[in-house]
Every structure is written in structure tokens, then in C-alpha cells.
Amino acid sequence: MADPAQPNQPTQPTQPTQGEQEELGCLRQGIDAIDDQVLRLANERARLAHRIGEIKHGNIYRPEREAQVLRRLAEASAVAGGPLPETAVRTIFREIMSACLALEQPLKIAYLGPAGTFSESAAKKHFGSAPALTPCGAIDDVFRAVESGNADYGVVPVENSTEGAIGRTLDLLLSSPLQICGEINLRIHQNLLSQSESLAGVKTLYSHAQSLAQCHEWLNRNLTGLARVPVASNAEAARLAAEDAESAAIAGEAAARRYGLKILAANIEDDPNNTTRFLVLASHDAGPSGQDRTSFVCSAQNKPGAVHDLLTPLKQHGVSLTKFESRPARGFGGSRWEYVFFVDVEGHRSEPRVAAAFEDLRGCVGFLKELGSYPRASQ
Image 1: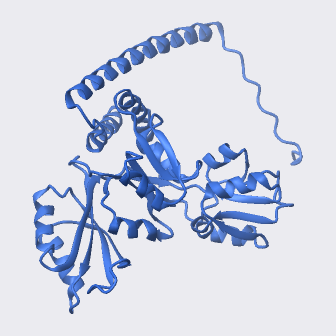
Image 2 (image 1 turned 90 degrees about the horizontal axis):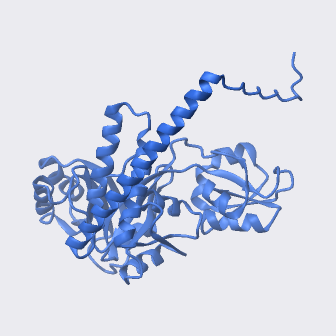
Image 3 (image 1 turned 180 degrees about the vertical axis):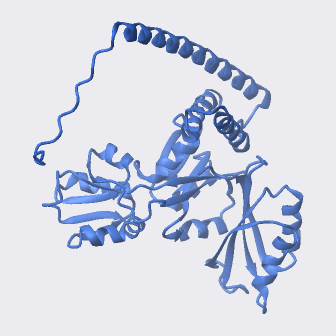
């Protein structure tokens, strides 16, 4: 029996034969030729995008157009048999579109910071690497940055598949003039980070309250005696852990890289499908892309069966409901309602069935505010 204390020695690679060496040379020449074609076509695409910008004389970022392009290319790759997975295809072409757009209209994106948060990862997933990303200390600050024109777009979390809605985002959507023009679904992988090689000398664990909750069972099994300290963000937790060798943090890989921390345990979230949904905020929403979602907030009249009446127009017009969230009607003082309902439905508000449902809704609710229509996020 092999000694378990001795790791298996890696197998030494064999040297290619003469024939394989010749084949490798040919394959590399083929790759170089394809790379030259890719470069030429990328520059040609940039020239076409530049001309579109000249013709449009204004905002050339179109969320619905980008969603259509990414969807078409992902589907075309799948039909062709790959081998690139859909996520890789989307990432490659997102970066190409991001770089082309930056030539004409450099975007400023505000997100819930500091740097290294999942919100930053969501912003990069949606907009690519070209825009200038500005971290904000609070969700309120993201809204204010976009409302004031200091940022073109904002990215904020709105709900987590494990812990539910982000109340502050919903409250601000109720009062803000901003519209939703996009959404991002980001798989959340939590990691245990520290300067230390092990947890033997660690006394304190920092993380955002939601992340602590998302890893509750893992922590109870593995770190029962460690003091848990909630902080404003996972990136802030990582920063604190980087300053104190007797502490650890729960955060993502981006925070580990930024603050130079070791990953002592990876993917410690209790739900392997843990996902956070983010919203993209702007002064406008998006045009129809063919696979859209519309969000609105409303109140039910103070009478028996009011909530049933609220849902009836959606059913009558064949509009599919995907979210129904109640929330205290903060900021309305002595108004006649106590709760409002945040609702997501399938379809764009310009579609006849959705428009007809909204028309009927206005007659049976105490208040209705359309928050925007936007392309549905890829998974």
C-alpha cells in the first residue's frame, strides 16, 4: 500500500515524436493565420460600429441590441456544435462589443463597492472591461450617481436566491425616477479567505450579513467557535482580513486577488446554485429584444379581494408573472395604502398584451409605477 504521507509523483510528459513535432508546427501556423483573421475582422467590426455612432449622433449603447447579438451568437455556436460553451461565447463577444463601444462612447458605471464586490463582478459581466467602473459606498449612492449624471448606468443587487430581496434597492426604485434597462444573474461562490495558512490562529470572521447567512450551515459544521462580525460588504471584509492575520473573511475570488488573501476553503455556500440578481439602472429602459421582462410596483386598493383583482388583468391577457414581492410603502406617510407590491412579468411593455394588462391594472390599483422593460438575463 502506498504511503499516504507521500504524494503521488506527477507523471513526466513524453517528448513528441518527429511526426508529432511537424504536426504541432502546422497547427500553430494555422492558429496564427486564424488569429490574423480574427484581428482583421475585429477592426472591421470596430469601423462599422464607429460609423453607426456617427449616424446616430448620440447614445449608441442599446441594451436590447446587445442582448440580441449575444443570444444569436450563443445559439449559432450551439447549433454548430461548439466546442466553446455558451458562457465563453458570450464573454468573448461581450468584450468585443465593450471595446467597440468605448471607441465612441466611453461609459461610466457606478456599482455597489468597494472594489472586489460581487456587484463589481456583475458590472463587468454585463458591460465588459472597457467602461470606467466607479465603486459607491451604498446602494443610495449608486442611485444618486446615475440620477445626477455622474454615471451613465448603475448596477445594484435586488435579490438573492437564498436570502431573498434587497429591501433598500426596492425602496429606492419606488421613489427614484430611474428605469431598469437590464438585469444580471451572477452565480455566487463564497470562499473563506485569510492571510494565514490555516484557521488555527484565526479568531474573527468578517463578512456581509447576507454572505454569513448563505454559508450558515457550513460555518456551523466547520467554524463553530469563530466570532462572526457582519460588515458593509464582502470586499470590506477582505480588506479587514488583509490587515489582521488573526482574522478571516467570506468573499469572492475577486476580493481574494485584490487583497492578496489565500483561499482556505472554496465554494462554502450552502446552496450550490446560489445566485444573485442585479439590476442595471439608467435614465431610460430598453427597447424590445424578443425575450424581455417588465417590472412595476403598485398598491392594492383597501377592499376585500384587492390582491386578486390586481392579478386578474395579467391572467386575462396571458401575461406570465415571475415575481410578486410585498414591501412596506415607505415614504408615503398617511396615504391610503400600507404595502406596495413589486411585480415582474414576462414580455416588453410595448407588446399589446402587456400594454392591455397595464391599462386594466390602472383601473383597479391605488397606485402603479412602471419601472422599466429590459432583456432577460442569461443564466
